[in-house]
Image (cartoon, rainbow, N blue to C red; front, side, top):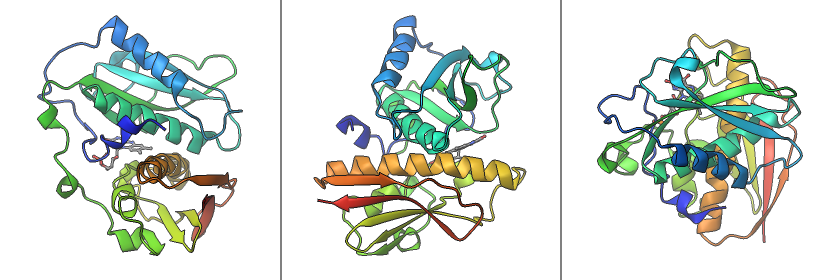
Length: 251
Ligand SMILES: Cc1cc2nc3c(=O)[nH]c(=O)nc-3n(C[C@H](O)[C@H](O)[C@H](O)COP(=O)(O)O)c2cc1C
């Protein structure tokens, strides 16, 4: 996975409202670069087809001050939600490296129907940001669970301390890692968060969150020089305490 994504982990943040970020537009060439970048990202499940469409924010129900929304569509197959999270997080970090602010927008809905054979999954709202200082300055700017709340067993320097910063719906951080030689990644049920989001909606978002987390985990493992073999597990669990999503054998 692309090493330049690693450098954005401590910089990225959600622009819940794109206020005071300037009014520079994304050019046609930059929009086309986003499409090309999407084609180059690695999926978790290569057999599940995905597509993006980049539309003006006015073509959605969002009113965030974004310029465009990147609509993410997928074939409706088992694993499509973590797959979209994994791909979308690569896009999120890549956009930050280009000076574009982002927001994963779970409550967003596009006006247009999905392309034939695809379902709409989620969108990432985007707008250029006029000053690099408007991204995060470092670890102190995050509100997250402590490392020992999300990681059981031996911690890996440069990995455990960074994967904590992965974004998640309502900041629910539904992940738990168990390191007992191999690294098992679980989705936690009953995060008790969501507010206006239904339990069903939250389960859907949390499955996307898990893909986001696996993206962070792999970017950090690769950066720290850990070679690994990943096995994915179908997440058929509901709100049970722990549902295994993936196991990494460190080689
Ligand atoms: C799958 C997903 C859906 C999200 N949906 C929304 C949303 O609808 N509205 C919103 O303001 N933020 C949304 N967020 C942003 C989260 O609230 C945010 O990532 C989390 O609070 C952590 O903050 P940070 O991204 O600034 O680090 C979503 C994030 C994820 C990962």
